[in-house]
Length: 426
Image 1 (cartoon, rainbow, N blue to C red):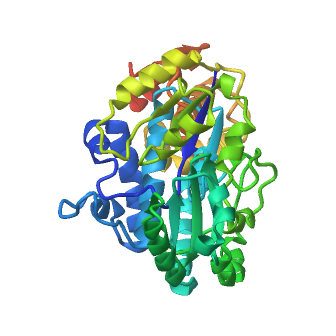
Image 2: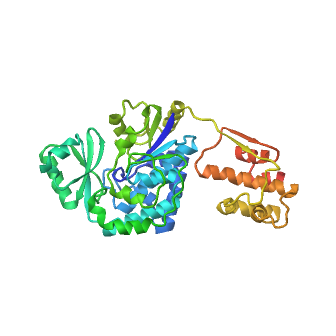
Image 3: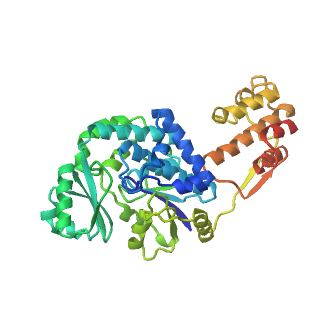
C-alpha cells in the first residue's frame, strides 16, 4: 500500500506540541534540535525554547506568526524524518497551506535551511505589511455559507474540509462581527489562532513583495508524488510563484483526497494536532488506514506502536545496500560529498597523508588506477554515499553487502567498525 504523509498549516499549533515525543524519542529530539539550531543561526531565536516554555499553558494562544510558522515546520519536519529513519518512506505527500513547505522539504524539493529562510522572510513580510484579520472554522455544511448572506456577508470561503466543516477568512473587524453572529445564531464554530486573513483577497496587497521574495528559490524535482492543496492534483514543474498561490488561493484538501485511490493508501497525519486524520473520517468510506501521532485533545499517543502498525499494514519493503569493489572507480566520483562531510574528509586526508578529495575529483597524477590509492578512495566515497542516504532520510537498510573492498564499507554501515578503522584496514 502507498504511504501518504500529510502536513497541516496555521491553526494547528499550541504550546508544548511535541514535547512528550521530544523527551521520549531520540530521533525526533535530534531532528527538532537540528532545525532549531538553523533558526538560531539565522535569527538568534530558539523556537524550541519558546515552544516548550514551562510558563505557557496549552490553552494559551500561541503567537506571533513568526514563532508559530517555524514551530509548525520544525514539528512536521522532525516527525516526517523520524518516520523515514524508521523505514516508513512516503510514496506521496499532501501539504495544506503552510504544510506545503513541509511537503516540499520532505520530498527533497527544497533544502531545510532554505525552507527556514523562506518561512522567516514570509512571516516577517506578512507581519509588516498584511492587514490584521482572522479565520473561523464553521462546523456545518458549506451550503450554510451561501444560504445565509446575512451572516457571511463580506467574508470569503477558503476551504471546505468535509461535509460538516468549512473555513472562512476576513479582516479583523468583520471576523469579530461574524463571531458574534455565529454565537447569536447558535452555529457551532471555532476561531483559529491566527491573526491574518490567509487565502483571501485581504493579502493581495503583498503579492508583488512576496513574488520578489521567492524569485530566487531553488526547487528540485520531488523524490515522490506531491499533491497540491491549491489544485487538488499532483504537482508538476513547480516554479517559485506557486508558493504565492499556496498563501493566497483556497485550500482544496478534500479534493486532494478524493482524487486519490484511497483503497490503496495509508494516510499518516504528521501535523501537531492530528486534525487532518480527523477530517478523513468524514471524507473516506472508512478510516482503517488512517494514522496520526498527535492529538488536539492532549492524548498521549504511543508513536512506536503507530510506526509498527504502519509497517505491518503497509508491508514494509526490504532494502539492501551493496557497495562496489575495485574497478568501479572513476575520476570525479564523490562530487559534492567531500564538502558536505567536511570533517570525515579531513580525517581521511590526515590518515592517508594526501587529499582524498583532490585524488577522487581530479586525480592530477593519474594514481586512481593504482590499488594503493583505489581502495581507500572507493572506501571513503562508499561511506560518504551511505551517510548521504541516511541524511536524506532514506532509512537504514535491512541488508548490507560489499564486493571486494566494498566489504569494508558494508562493515562500517553495519556498525562493526568505525570510519578510521576501515580506512586503516584497507
